[in-house]
Length: 483
Image (cartoon, rainbow, N blue to C red; front, side, top):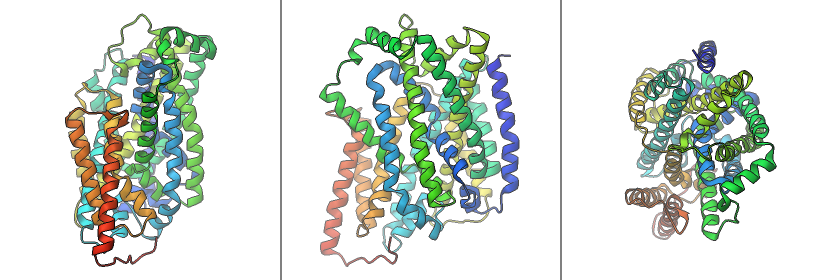
């Protein structure tokens, strides 16, 4: 049995006592304790659970493949991450105090509170929940796909892609159900440390193997000279479009919103987000170096699936020496940690929304139905993940395009009190219909601008028009609560 597989088994075994300890620490079978750890996450745990959740398997594997394809032009991911980190400041300062005061557990609780007097609030909450659940299902699908790809490489094909997907799905389901967010957050600390350690090993090897940053840059310039040229206006528009799409969508991830709700206090949350921005830039640098190094290493090798670029690079690294084999195994373990830390958070958020946001009334005590929903969801998504014929980057884009349509319901309405649920609902329907039409026609962008952002523009335009109409012709709406 390979060293990588032994380390993976040891990693799974370490998670067991953490989950059992988290279960023992649970104070009740209420939704607030299971999904938010009773709002008790301090800086250390909150920071690592944000880090481990933000850098998913499709980020590490998918972005590496895209860097291999696009060379230096993929440096836009640094700007993308900076935009994402900055976007949290539009949401956190106002939403976190409200979430504590009114005991929000799921994203739908914000909609209940914000539009409680409106007649269309129920329809808006359900449609938003459906959109968010679809993005989470997409996200979980991507994690399982990445897990299958990595497991196949780790074992040299001894464990097939299909078996790898099934094993990971089972492990995630078990410890998600046992300990809730507390188990997820505690294991995320271990997984985050593993990710950081693996990233350090990887960046040291890349620099040594390529002869330094200058030599690496020269190699990429010779092999892909087109990626060294100053990007034309079309490429610059695509860069800006991608950064905006990421910034406006990631901030309303359901698991991100629930981390905001679960923090012990606002100061802790702000410090965690600040630290996340710093370590995020470092991790993005590692991903970029992987792709650039692969351009040189595989200059004369046909790469049929770009999602295999990182596993292939690690396989070559591991074969160079025993010490490098151990280091490569740690990096593979880090990728698995990234996959698991994201998948467990996504599953938890997905189940919470299916259980509490889509039904007419939310039952906050008793978790038996939540466990049943978790099993059904994982079985359905696992069966879908057995299909390998889609790239991880395409999954990321589709997820963000749909997610960004939910941005007005959370961020715009947080800052503009006069907006009513009917306007948000009309805008959301417009944006989703536009996006689905574009996807069905195979349109990915218009003039370099991502179709998800164009759909958001249509969304916001309709929201504004309906709001103006309501303000002129409807009975004035007075919110019971000041935001």
